[in-house]
Image 1 (cartoon, helix red, strand yellow):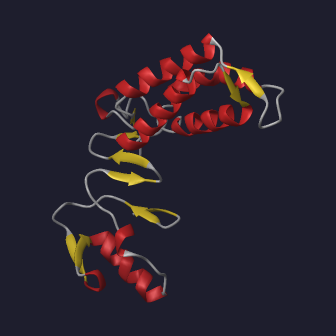
Image 2 (image 1 turned 180 degrees about the vertical axis):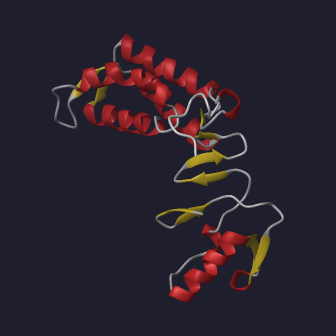
Length: 179
């Protein structure tokens, strides 16, 4: 079982469930036992936060342990794409530093699941360099638009980040130490 603040996740055989009486629901055994422990210790928890299934959203990322991938949920991905499209397609060629910062922050967050797309922000950061007033105007040039379009095209096609591909890994050949 793994915990991140109040989000707990892990794996369990599908048939290995247990009734957690306070919620009158069956949960994976480890999760139900953790809830009973929290009750014993007086740690509050809510039924709607107790998730389990084949694909879970953990700290805003969609985790599929069977496919061994992490990606953005479809809605988050589409929201990000719409924001970027609005940013690059608005009629005026001028944006504020604040808008550039919002864009770069959101895109930078997505790098947790799309780590190879970092280059798309090089020109964005270059345009923001040396500016410190949130309302400072910044000209939106072709290089920034092209980089952000490249980013959109890649995340649309991406299935996420593959955590581990067991077919391509041999522990005897590619490991410093095997126990």
